[in-house]
Figure 1 (cartoon, rainbow over the protein chains, first blue to last red):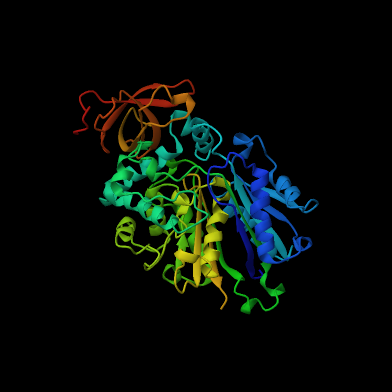
Figure 2: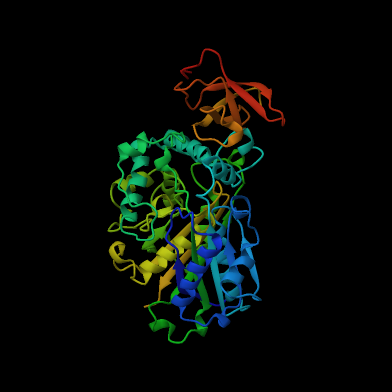
Length: 389
Length: 82
């Protein structure tokens, strides 16, 4: 397989935008990525789009065709990837593989979601389809409640306290204060997290990621086709990619406090990159809920099992810490436009590796990892990126 | 799944889909029986602020209209002190 690099990125601000259509968000983020790449559109060979549920929330399916039309790429092959919250991570990998195998030299990959215009019940119903519709949603389980059950079991197995779990969203909100594209610009405290509306006990609204509108794109190219790639600071190489799976529902699993899909994807990505967890300088991990970030950082090998929340409290995951996690503010505070999130995470990693992250810039970050989960960790996509200098 | 099982983990839901909005807050639990089988079930008989604990016993009550088992909290264990 050929080496593939990210040569351009673009995203919308994340938030609640009743005046914006999915079409307009695609145009905004996609055009920014193409402009950032400095290429002519005619070089783009194909379009790969992540989208979870616009069919239900917006009445619009066939997002690949919409994106190709809106970006003036009509006639190019296009497709939509759907893997719940990992839809954009999957679209990114599909585009990367097409370039790696030589089918195209340049592709554009993106994701989009619009969900703030519908009722909370409709958002909850749409998200519940990321779990098992018949045997989980059908008995009354909501998506937050499944992770709430995981949180209860995790506290039972490891003795972690509610306060320790609540430290995670507090840090995400602090990081988001430094990110102009973030939806939430507000500090919170552990007390506020615990006192929030109890969406699904023990998780409150402050443990849950945001409901967001937004879009993110990246332009990928075969590294060998780029002139002076080694000297161009904007060329960020994809050195590892992993894709792991697990059962759709949690009842089939032996263990629910560690995610097999993450471990499988991480093994593949680390092996491809020739790295271990200790080589990673920064990571964006899928914090759909506070407990999920804790489990992810353990499954990725950054911390020992049961120690993920203590690491946050000790500052190890802070911007100046040993392994900065979710410098963007994460799904919790940057936002979680479900079908765009996987590429929104990669956007942050690329910004950091190019040293364009402004006030939240991590010093000397050379290797970054993006971890994107779908459903109750039934799907996991991991990408490892490296600065070339 | 056996008629008697223990709560492996649980959640109390306050924000539901429209289909369950007249039941909030309600209890769901991942159950485990003596043979090691696991099943996710709606649990009848929960009162708000009732103390629920991992390890608490529940008993099969009935099937719902789609044939999915509903369990209930065992009498006398309302405060989960098993």
